[in-house]
Length: 192
Image (cartoon, rainbow, N blue to C red):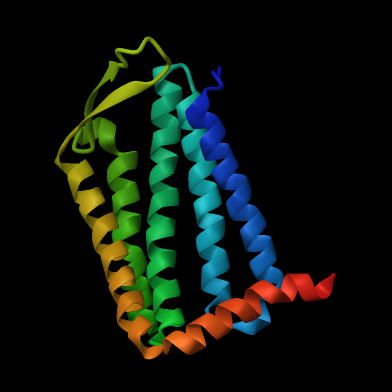
């Protein structure tokens, strides 16, 4: 595989490194909150997604770009699912995470990955590819209805997780939120 390092590759690689660094920091403090483990898994999924997206952005040959694009859907499906699971943990709604619900949460992203992996047979996700008009190694994906289905799933999971977090926000008093923020930001200074 040939790669062309470009700004997208650099930004996505930095994102992956930052996500790993944050996951390591969260790992060291995992005992502080019950939502730590889902948060760490969310960060690691983000790192995987950003790494694969960086490789897709840098790939030159169309088959290589398609290969990495397919792996991006594994990453994005994991990110959206772990975000929803994190939101459930963070908002103390873990009772929703029964075995049945957890399987259902993972079922849609898994089926989306199968949809993308078999795109050559049905062309529901991508119908074609057009070289970028900028003369770079970037391509424009011509999306089919399967792509819009996958994006709808991503947005619904994100909206559900965000809604849970927003609903939980009024429960914390402004003074408690400020005190917790000051306390967290002062801890690294106190270690010096």
